[in-house]
Every structure is written in structure tokens, then in C-alpha cells.
Image: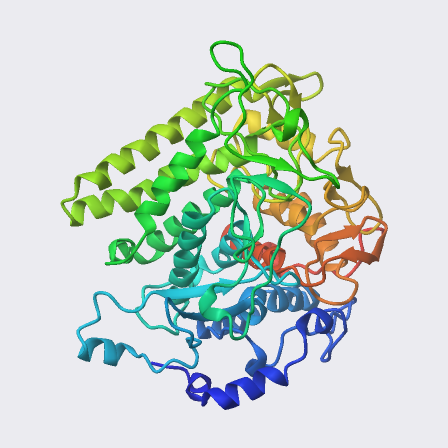
Length: 542
């Protein structure tokens, strides 16, 4: 059934949208009613007519949690944060090769049934921006939507949450087929009426070449491809809709092959058998910073160790060493999980290629895991056996962590191992201590910071991940207290916050971190519901 507001004529929809305030500014101001707790947090959600996607299941969950979460500030932060992606970042939805917005479209399930199109309805597309940056990152958009897998159910309706997932997967498929080494993209041509493209060309020199009118940023980040696979497998796990991945005209399996080929091409070393220096298939030369050494190829790396090289981290910063361990962890897991889609297709459609592709994915997954366990486990004099963040295969390692997912801290969250794994436990202790060069502490909050922002500024995302990977109730309560008191009264999860001053922060509209906060609350309700009955009314310094 179509939602009433979607039945508005296109002219009225356009008028409503034109009257909505720009959320980048809206998120920086306080709005009543304020929460009734110590922090008086702003109500940060747009009015319903200004929300970019309305999902009744989200509203029902928020109302249900009002009877679960006792602390008024924690509840306000949850009701602002969890729906952030749907409220504010679904910039455009439509169909392939059509210029009408899906909200204005006249296509319905009933029409599809009448015309015999139910098996192959129009290809849905969804352009999901990060928030304050009007571009679609493969990683961010996937992680943003994964915040809603707990309420994702099968539905062919073009107004459903399932349709939104399908649209994002379809658009990511297109992007990967066009530019598999790139990480962020502009709106599709179908959306050009409301989201015109512009050239992203700058002084950077990157190979292989790509379309500057389609790509927003071309940084080679292995986790981008892993995120595409994770989004696909999460949709399949929740809906069991294998037919979606094999519809006529679907290029999903072709995109998976490109993912594997791209990763395989980045598993080689820096020298050939004759000792000649080899250029990587991807090179990145940025004259204003971030350029890898050695003619834009990076430092020498040993090949044949099972790992995939990544030029950039999930923070978009350049890697010190290109075997980025958390990204390889995530990629290994995503390969194995999404192979189940191919298994299902092989069972439905007698096509030999599905089974072979599944086997290839699992073989690569196992090889990466073997490489991680052989090369990424190192000895720390204080913490014992831990995982390195980056390595080159020759023995050089980088011992740190970054808040962005995938991180070492998030290894259980991404499904690589159990939080009780002894090597992970030791790694976690180091990450969440002053032995981590990017750990920051202060009277407002303490946690993992990032070289992407200034030192001394923990990322709330890292505190959320600490909660998601913890069984220690004292640690969980401390993190929740820090999170509630670190929003500068705005009631949103920021990118980074000064450890000693909640009024100094970056990115007021960062939907990924907000959705992750919502996931954390829902996870706590399942694991430790009594914590949500506690109060968080004093700040961390008291």
C-alpha cells in the first residue's frame, strides 16, 4: 500500500521540499521540545513532510523504546539518531533509465501484475548521501542502511524499506562496474533534474582513469567493496530474496566478479620474479598531500601472502602500509557471507557459473583469513599477542586503530571473530588505552581518535563500537554517559568531539554514526536491558 504522503502530486511534493530547511544548518541549531534531563537535548528530527523516507516500523520502534529507556536524554539521543539516514539522507529514489522520482512515479505493484512485470519490475535506484556531503560513499551508504536490518522484511512494494535496500544495491552495482577502484560517487544520470552533476577533476592524478562526471572521489579502499557485499548479504539474510539478484537485466553477479578481479589484482607484491619494480593496477598521486611514495605506488609490499592491498583507510586517509588488516578482515567475512547468495541462486537456477563463483569467493575468503593470522599477529611487550592495524608483509607494522569501521575494535561486530578471542581481547585492551597513539582522553569523553581529525578528539563512533563489543557493564555505562554528554546539546552524534570541550566538534550531520548509535541501543536491549533502565544525568567529570 502506498503511503498517503506519496500520493501528493509532483508539484506539491516539490513545493513541500522547497520549504524544508537545509538540514546542515538545522542540525546545528537547538529545537524544542528539549529533553527533560540534565543535558536538555534538542529535538533534531525534521518534520514528517520534510523527511526523505518514512518507514512506519521505525516510528513504532521509537515509540516502543520510550517504555524501555528510562533516561530522558538517552531516549532523545536515540530518537534523533537512529532514523537519521531515513530522515535526511535519501536524496533521490527512482528507476533505471527513467527520470521520475520514485515518490512521483505512477508505477504500482498492481500495475506490474496487470502488465505481467511482477518477476522483473523496474530496476529500483536509491542515492544515499552521507549527510553534509552530497555524494554516495559505498561504505557509508551501506553502513547507514545496515542500521535498519533489525526491521527489514521482504516486500515488493516500491515504498518499502526492502525497496530502499534494493535501490542502494542496484546503484552500488552500477558504480562498481563503472569504477571499481573508486569509493564515492555523484548522483546517477536519472537524478540529474534535481541533482546535477559537476566535474570532480582536480590536481590529483589517478589510474586507472574514471569518469569525473560520475565519480566524486576515487580513493582505493578495500572496505568499499566489502561494504557492497555486506549490504547484499544483509538484505538476503533478512528477506531470503535470492530472485532479486538474478532478475533479467541484473548485473549483480557481474559486479561480484569485478570485485573479485579487482581484489585479486591488488594482492601482488612490489617486485616481479626478475626483481623489477611493478606498478600497482591503481596509483594515486595527490600533489597537495597523501601521495604514496615510490611514484605513487606506496612502500614495497611482499606479494603472495593472501592479503589485499588498500591505498586508503575507511577514514579516506592514506595507509602507511597497504595491507590494512581490518579491511581484509571485513572483506574475508563479506566474501563468505555473500557466497550464500550464489549458493541460493545455484539451487534455483541450473547455471554452472553461480556455484563456481561461490567457490571462488570462499577460497579467497579463506586465503585472506590465513594471511591475517600468519602475518598480522604480532607481539606487544605490554599486551602480548595482538593484531597489527597495517603491515607490509616484510615485517613492518603499524600498531594503532582508527574509529571508522572496519577497525580492529570492530572485528567482532563485522563477524571476523568472537569478542572473547584472546588475541582480540589483548588488541582491544591496547586500543582502548593510552598505549594506542590515537587514544584521546578528557573530562567530556575518552576514546579512539583519528588522524583524519585533530589529535585529542575522540570519535563517538568509537565509543559506540566499544559498547557493541563489551560485556563490561562499568565500561558500557561510562561510554553511554560520555555519549549523552558530548552532543553540545544538539542531540546528535558528531564525527569527532574535543575530549575537554563538547562545544568543539566536527560534522553535525553525520548519519552513519547516528545510525550506529541506534543499533547499539537496540543491541543493548537484547543483551543487557537493565542498563537502559539506568540514568545518565551527571557528566563524566563529576
